[in-house]
Length: 192
Image 1: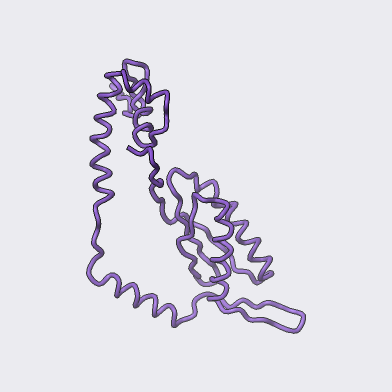
Image 2: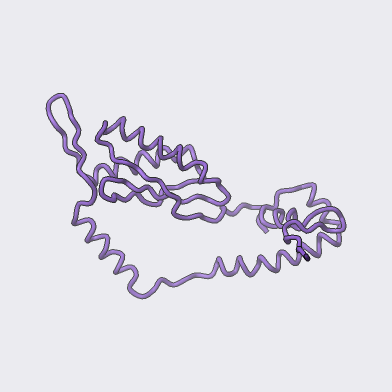
């Protein structure tokens, strides 16, 4: 059976691997490898090939994409319609002088604020949306690659729920937290 070594694991004659060169190409942060590259023809040739392959990917990512005709108008129409109809459940809060009824939009707004404050401690995640779905509030997040968001989501959900219970008591809605998208890493000055 002939098994090919993945490109990222392929060793070069000098002892370095193509994976190291790919990391260097994407991150540009390895002074020891940089010194080696100055004199190694194997690494120079491989790095040139990596740059050529990734150049096409970068060009594709930087190509502007036009939105389909009418997308903005359709999106605004949906938003206007949803604004005109309350979605979600009213929250009833028992107080010393009686009951307080909280609109679903206020609960969503409170949740957004709490999530944004909590996410200040987790810069690799950002809030995309907070959407009521019946008795449940769905919080959609975007992770910046290469964050291990799946490890963070359960604890984040528990923390959001705990803070909502602190504000709304037992009437706090159930929360679901999902990873809706992964954003590319932010560019840095060493990017090649």
